Image 1 (tube, rainbow, N blue to C red):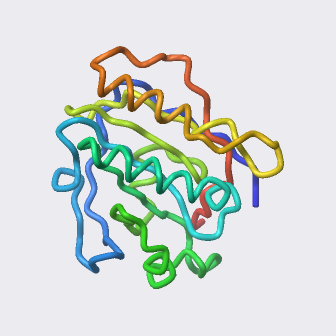
Image 2: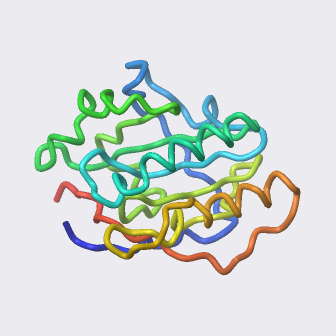
Length: 181
């Protein structure tokens, strides 16, 4: 595990399109068919990362709460499964997330989003422009901060209220994406 900060895609960037395997349905899924007319959260996660595991329960709670308000959540795993077989599609399926969990075999989508670590969060508005990118909250394994999802939920609440989102956003911290070389 290499501790890595997210690269912070520029705000107002257009969400790169994709077509990836949804491991929950075993079908290809496209961004345009998964997006929300309100806001879409795209997150790069994986199965084995201790930073993802640390927030996993609260992440599911947050996703369920905001999906009930019309927002959509999409998880993508881009890790090299040759070196990290726990992140393979059959293992991804075992997570039973309440949102699509997509496999980025070529890692092209992670590169397009400038994703660097797991977890890495992006929130896009109704026009798929980036309004938030960075961390879930300040909690990491061992830092004794409560897992709240505050950074992400503050952004989502602002979108729902039609208010501007603070541009002082903090990078996510986690395991580096396991790139194929």
